[in-house]
Length: 606
Image (cartoon, rainbow, N blue to C red):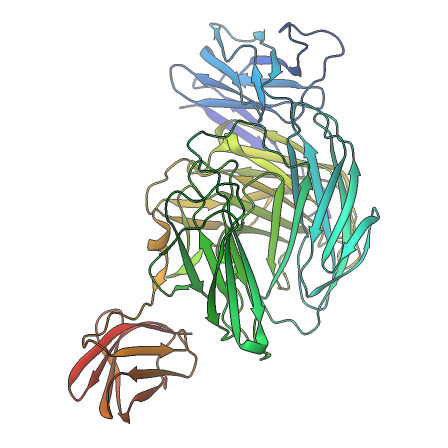
């Protein structure tokens, strides 16, 4: 906007990062001096603020310039007060309501024709429905094998009435052993722990921690999964009359004695599916076949069985159209094998079924972090050519880890993150953290987490690590190939800021186009069946022919540029291709019998 930024900081010896002073000036060098202030509060139906009416914390208010379309943001404090600093000109001011709320006035138009002016616009909020709106989030600073881990569970009620008593259901990974918690659990069945967190009033929040030890026999990058579900979890908006009342759920079960993995698709709704939906099965990062249709009546289920090869398997199913909430039926299973070696690093590539605010699934790969600050993006994204591919309209979650590398205790820490234009700033949802923080949203895509009195202990001691998470939606229908780079800055004391590494996602418009399809094509000769297994493979892969007598088989393998990499021959009904010096990657194959092409397909060497 042809303005100026003046920035500076003061240095304090011994601290590794700092807080800075930033001043924005207009095109003529003047500071933005106009303020739009007000209060967002729970109104008693007269749309006028009265003493004692509840201020609503962490609500976002935005002011949009009529001339430039620039958006300025403010965030309400614990009393519901907000303050937005703007330039001169005309602005439309509106609050971004949380679920089950509506403002008395949708928007205000304001004008500043001079500097140093302040206008007050309050937003009385009325309930659309009398309903609790529960949120929960769970995570840990870092997860590693053979380690003591502290998980932090944060929860809130952003609804229009008290929760009437709330419980959190925590399901921990089979390779985690709970050793304690800051509040007692009231029930434990296998890996399920139930916590009573009491009655939460409007805008009330709370937190607790659980401690656990991880297995010492885990593999590098294996997934540790902890899920949290807070009750009540009702959805109070009326269901669409177009919904057929079916509800698709998925489940993954390991049966190592039968060398198999079973996926169970079930209709848990009160209505039959009125039309077919699709599901896909992914092995590691490979979609083994085109999407498959299914249709289930009330209470019906079906099983999809895959051979257990040590690969990571995931099922993703479509949900019924107009289904209430934001359900995304998916389940993954890793390490389903009697062998001590199995594939890792694939669970985090894909989104989990936690779009609804009352559910959160934390998946972290076992890793030892050497950096004292780090940003991680979830889903990690499908890995292709060094890029992290995610579908359009998939929510992104960021986990910012920090550690005190000094010999002094840090008392205050600030994180600032300037989000790219491909993310919707207005949808940022702050999540779990190791310590209490204040959350704010600024103009130009800036969000801020302030940790006052954090007491981050010196390096190497307990309490020297921390983290914060937040979730944000993509801008609707980001085009194919859109880049989503994100980097945060950490400030401590008065030292120069330290930046995390940049985590970049790339948008793949159609989800199935993001995946490698290694389906075996229809055979060239009727009655002949060709199987290729295991796929992906490490040292060798078997091509098996059924429906043909003893023949001379020949396999030709080509790289992604169509160059012949290797060819091998064998007599009989099967051929074992030895990998030899083939680099890891995707290959196309052609199988012949006595000079006649039987089939073609794709294989992957890892």
